[in-house]
Amino acid sequence: MQIKELEKSSTGVFGAVTQWGHEQVVFCHDEATGLRAIIAIHNTTLGPALGGTRMWSYATEQEALTDVLRLSRGMTFKAAISGLNLGGGKAVIIGDANRVKTEAFMRRFGKFVNSLGGKYYTAEDVNMKTSDMEYIAMETKYVTGLPESMGGGGDPSPVTAYGVYLGMKATAKKVFGKDDLTGKRIGVQGVGQVGMHLVEHLIKENARVFITDISQAKVDALANKTGAIPVPQDEIYSLDLDIYAPCALGATVNDETIPLLKCAMIAGAANNQLKDEVKHGYMLADRGIVFAPDFLINAGGLINVYNEYLGNYNRQRAYQQAEKIYDTCLSILAFADQEKISSQEAAIQLSEKRIREIGNLRSRN
Ligand code: NAD
Image 1 (cartoon, protein in one colour):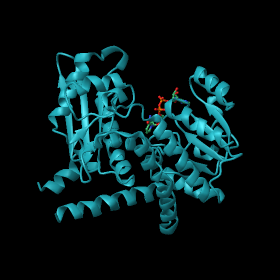
Image 2 (image 1 turned 90 degrees about the vertical axis):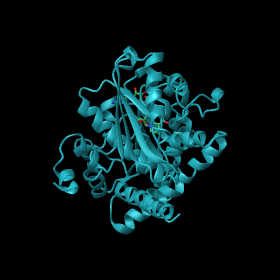
Image 3 (image 1 turned 120 degrees about the vertical axis):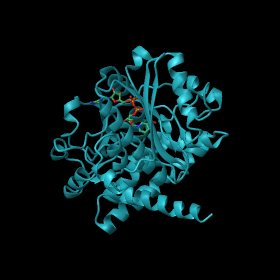
């Protein structure tokens, strides 16, 4: 059987890996610590694959594989559209972070990262803390997201929130004719690390901000601090809003929620907000709701760790780079209009264009 035919007919692991063109997927196992992890390297044309490690109690191995493949592909686009010289990668560790994480467990994972020789750099993601990165750093230099005391960039969330805020303003310029958010009714779903900082920017600009979270304590604390208005979780979609800002989980823009939305635009921090990036991107466009591509406007965190990777971390430089999100967002929205495609598709096409062009440049020496 020819290789191409084999690829097409493949339904197992290779079927999944070839589906999105991944370069390498590494399955890591350590009997002594019970570590089971998958590292996925999607594309290294622009540079080493950098992406965080997520720890989650996946119900099945297939679920973990699908997650890491999807997330690592997203990192390729995020780095490319943000003008960074990085490829896309991600890692998942299967298990309950509260029960199985130990020093030995994290250091063993660090050894696996090290074995890739710098092709993959890790960082924090869901259920990973700076202290875990410190353990990983004992076994490899291919790690970012370290505390400032160790020369790292510290918590990336404020930079992420700043980028989301600027992406929101750029999208508002396109939708409302000016980027001023004064008086705009904005619903922020999820007031964790990023959502909380985003709300502070919005309140400073005199927006009317509505907040919701599964943690009532977080909602109450932020409402008291900023004057943002708490709303029940299930009301956020149907609220009379100008802007919906998903800052909790992915896939909240879907068949069920799109018909409920009354907003003119969506701009938030969550990764993979569109449950189906093609179908739901076009459903929004059909309803006249402008979508700020999530992997662009939430790239501040990646920009922050990129600066750490470059060395001599400087937070001001990270903020300056995050400011480019504003113009890039406007260019993507204009390109989407020009090509009559969804903004998500426009962002993907522009990312792929940069990868192609820089890849060609490199191959010419
Ligand atoms: P976080 O865990 O600090 O905050 C998420 C918040 O969402 C929590 O307060 C949680 O209680 C809440 N939440 C969960 N489910 C909810 C629901 N159904 N309804 C309402 N609230 C709910 O995470 P974060 O660091 O603030 O990240 C937020 C999102 O942005 C995530 O999707 C993350 O992947 C993405 N993101 C974060 C960064 C970063 O720098 N932290 C960078 C890029 C993307």
